[in-house]
Image 1: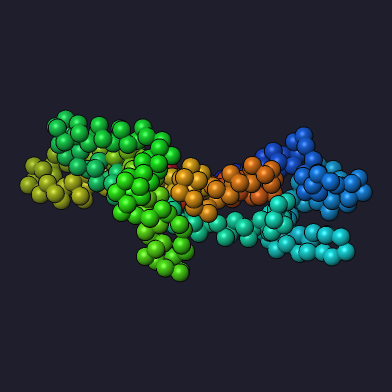
Image 2 (image 1 turned 90 degrees about the vertical axis):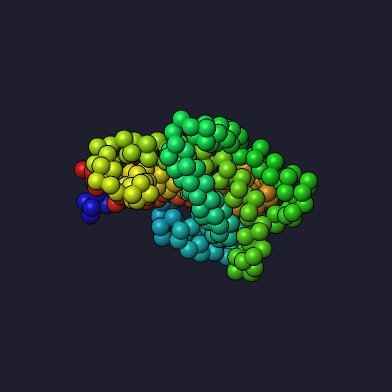
Length: 328
């Protein structure tokens, strides 16, 4: 297991390094002048040269990339005329629009995505595994057909459509919930949960379809194996067979996919956050892209990629822990 863990960690480090290189080339080495964006429209030639020197864009590309990497792991000092500002690691620079540290901007938004991801994951696992197990126990029967039809319909619905339907139904027609307005859990846990309920449902109802199919297929495959027939021949209770053996056979795949999906939501649920007005990374990405705020867009891209890499690594480790055959 230790060798497996080391291989996965080395692979994750290599992917993160490649991601940093690609992100840098995409946002800083492509045609265009980040210094012009940072300086603004009324920037004179001497001011533009000063901004280029402050950002380091007047240096060779290789040296710029090396500075970019060292800034991430060791911090960097930024000159703003007569004064110098120190940016602690991991330093992602400063926003062109608000002049705030990008790292702090991301840290301020990240709790929203963590709340959204964990709550939605709990719901989609509960709905997906529960309905998949319910359908697998009577395959081909009416409840299996109805479950598959409902799940297929929900899984085919785009997230923004589901979000709009939930908003219209719960906030406009039935008026059982107010329009979401994010409140940190540290201020009011009840309001935090109430305002995130609809976003959780929007993601969970769409995502649960995949978990239903995975659970149903895994349980049916396990129930058709020889050792299950042996247990039934020995008179083991059916409930014990299903809960202890059949569900366990479907868990590795479900856990692997869940870890990756949580990473994707953590990286920024753009449609969900935009529809419900949540101040998360997805909404920040949309706002920064519309104003061409390159340091913020670059920081979000790096953070999103890192979260997805970490989620994939965790998924591999969980799969290996649940199924020892994977370690080989």
